[in-house]
Length: 395
Image (cartoon, rainbow, N blue to C red; front, top):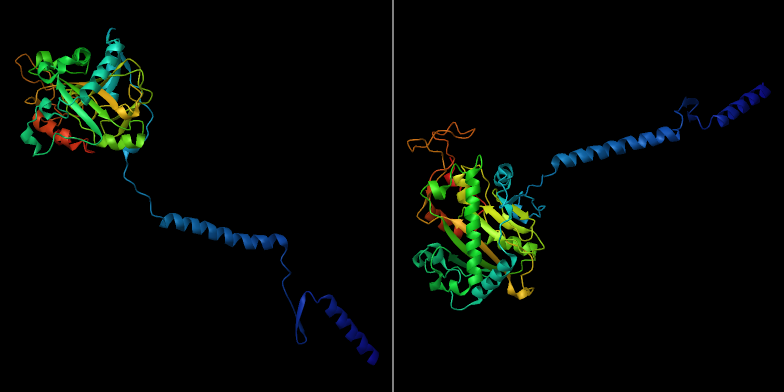
């Protein structure tokens, strides 16, 4: 019996030794335990919670993240230069191109105008001399028709950023020394002729002005020569700020000769208040449509809210001379009442043929009539507001 007991004990010890890795002893009982994890299911068990936590963390971050809301700053953008159609003045009118330029852009390049480039160069030289002269008033509101009493005792709008001179080309220039600069005088007359020609082109095309307002309506053309000098025009950031302080005046069409030294786009404020840049075409005339043109077209045309400003170097290459800008504005007298040009019937009454979408208006007009004097004063002093100044007259 002792021998049998010894064998049993040895077998039990051997069995216990062999299964030591698979059993835990609690007294005399042996309870099986689960097998050790393999490398595959161990990595799966560790990775699933981590991936789930990461996914949940990302989802929670997206749900709780505050959206970034920023007010758009169109004038601080750097848009690509616009490429409007080129209209040739000495060729048969392409109404489709002109309509596209007027309704899609609000500006275009005029070629075949016949204005000599050397005359334009001499006119800019005269303009610089005129701005630097001490005997001629600068920033003269009288040329616009405003009285000194309207300034509330302030000076005639001297500005740190630019100097402005306005001359009425339809008046006798001997009194203000305009005749002393024959090149500038001839140049302004050439651009004035081109401007009146553009109005005729806009009147003769389909879906343009229903007729020439200077020939068939009681509007008298008035042409202003607007000369300005601004600094740091090669710095785009300063140019954007400078454009916000740029003065303007209501006009039908504006004309600027595109000098061959313009190496960078011109900048202007578009119809919706956005900053637009216009790639120059050397020796062409840049034509912009203004507030009055948009009203006359019954809002079929887009407008440019400002005078385009070239940011390139000045014509004489001296950084301290400022950038000279010479613009001819075709406008109307201050006492004019501006309203859409609607077709007239045989008896002289306005016919009811509004555009699509105008059925809710009794006569198809999209603007109320308004006096130019009050509007011009506000536009000149508000300096390119973000809100469309014509919005208050919309129907």
